[in-house]
Every structure is written in structure tokens, then in C-alpha cells.
Length: 173
Image (cartoon, rainbow, N blue to C red; front, side):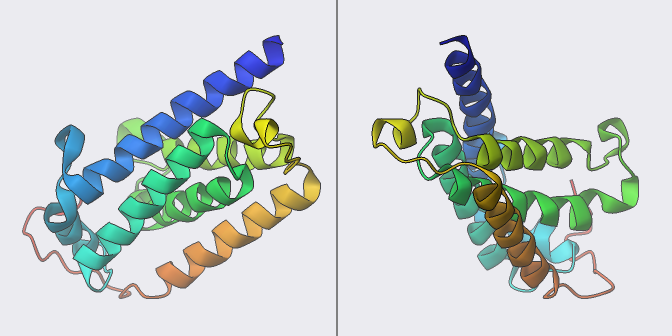
């Protein structure tokens, strides 16, 4: 039972934070910029059609966060987290190095690792997947989540301009 409670805690915190991160982009909740403000930031990072990219990232983070928090279709939610956090690591944080206090990719790396781990081990007994009798865990599910998340990240990253321009005058935040 303790393992189930521990897995629930990891999923609830990680999924809840990802939901909030997505809601910042989609709706401007929790101090976020909404599609307009986040879109300008995305354009400054070299992404085309910043508002559309903000909506895509926000929808992915929101859905993936709900998936992890509830433990429903966990590998698919994990793939979403891996995809958006790989993009964040490369586009927004990569040039700052590893450590978060320097603006680095430490936090997105932790979220991606937690998501991949959940795809490998499963969401635990206190989850929607378990309640529905789904056993979506193991090496194949983990590899599938990593492959889907990484390939979607590479596809989105390939749309970036090689020399991002600062269209807002403020740079990335």
C-alpha cells in the first residue's frame, strides 16, 4: 500500500504542476501569459506562429498533467511530458546549462525523467489505469513513451528558426 501512496504522491504533484504550467499558456492562469504573451515568448525562441505553438504546448501540458495526476493512459501522458519538456530544455534553457538557478534545463529534465519512470513502472494501484484493469507499464511502454515524446519534440524543434529573433524586446522569461 505504501508504494501505491508514494506513486500517487509523485503523480499528483508532477501532474498537478504540469496542468498548471499548461493553464498558464492556455488561459493565463497562475500568472501566465496566456496564448498572446506566451506566443510572443515562443516567437522570440524561434518558433513560427507563436500563439499556435503556445496553444499546442499548453494543451499538451494540461492534458499530460491530467493524465499523470489521474494515472489514466499514463504512457501517453508521459510521452506528452517528454515532448514538451525536451522542447523547453533545448529551446528555452539549453544555452544556460544544467542548473535551474542559471536558467538551465534542470527542472524540465526532472519532469521528463519522472514521466519516463512512470511509463516504465506504471502509475501504481491508486490510479485510473489500475481501476480500469489496464497494465500499461514495462519496458515496451517506457520505450514507446520515450520514442513518441522524443520524436514529437524533434518534429516541433525542426520548425524553429536557427537564429531566433526577439520580437518582444524582452527575450525569453
